[in-house]
Length: 205
Image 1 (cartoon, rainbow, N blue to C red):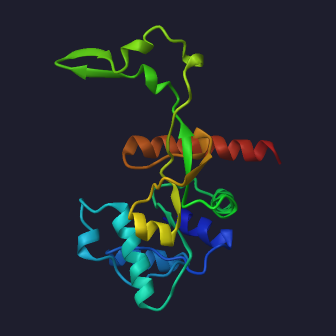
Image 2: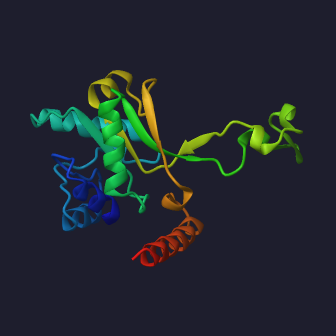
């Protein structure tokens, strides 16, 4: 979480950097690293069934009740330690320049999903059998959400009530600069990537 807060503060883009949480310990850590916690997350948005769009909406509406109105909001996830102030700024510039409703960082799948497999009744088969003999280089690239942040135009977000809207754009980033951390394996991969990134930085000095 500290990395995400630091990236937000260093971008110099925000009128307010806050952490949404229902946990006192997390709130104290957020304050320690320079973020604000003007209110706690409601029980409805603090359970395992809460969706991120509802959390963001709650934050926006709570600020509105405090007479604080914003044009755009960026939801930065605490499980994305490689997010940087520069990529946040690049995405924001695209949001404004292109008149978009959403901008997110994305990654190209490392293997063509058109040749993906499925298991049914203990048997493996292709999801799209027509691609059995297709060469990987002939298949169109496909991407997935990097799970780092979401820039949103608030008026559009409140109307659509979802993070990914029809008028959305994306920033393509390297797999080296993204690692969602949900499991112990994710954590180990993040450590490896961090060491690689640090070695690259030192070699460029």
